[in-house]
Length: 224
Image 1: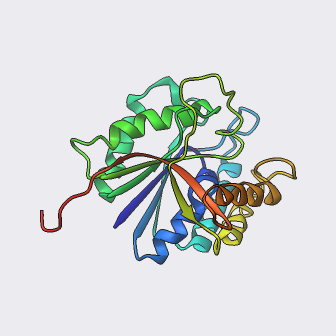
Image 2: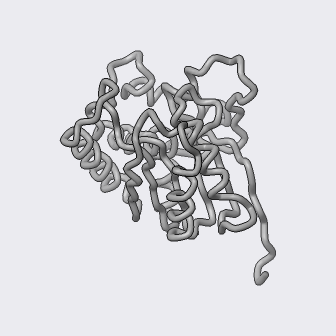
């Protein structure tokens, strides 16, 4: 199968789907990541820092072993200003990759860019007009978990991926992002990411897991 992970920022792909991507690769799936936005540092852009972050993303890709990486280079902290500026390039990536499975960030995240990417990604992966048969939403530690439990969009996982044997690889991939890693007890610390994976695993009787919300799954009879 062809798989597409749509990540608002560099590092979201690791935080939300790092283990699942490895599992897909191990299963023989063709995995692509699309990073939507560049990073702003202190609400300002620095070309050298952005390129360093891209190098970190490429290094993480080498560790996880997935196949394709796309950068849309849209402006960080501004993705919620125009949906059409998100939808069109995401439609182009979906048309190029032709994924059967797509992963999106969660609509209820604290980060406004994550919410905007979910809404645009939902359009780009719509049932009529896209090849996506399975659509899943991932959580991002430090964004999904820090949103107040007041809104209409809680993260309620109903699909889990066993990452017991690859949690250390996921953590190692995140360490490529030196500017985004934080000391414990931050959720993006090594200890925080391990604790989160263990917690999700305990929910379903596994040593470690990643949790997702399944939004759509179309089963087609073989030969149709």
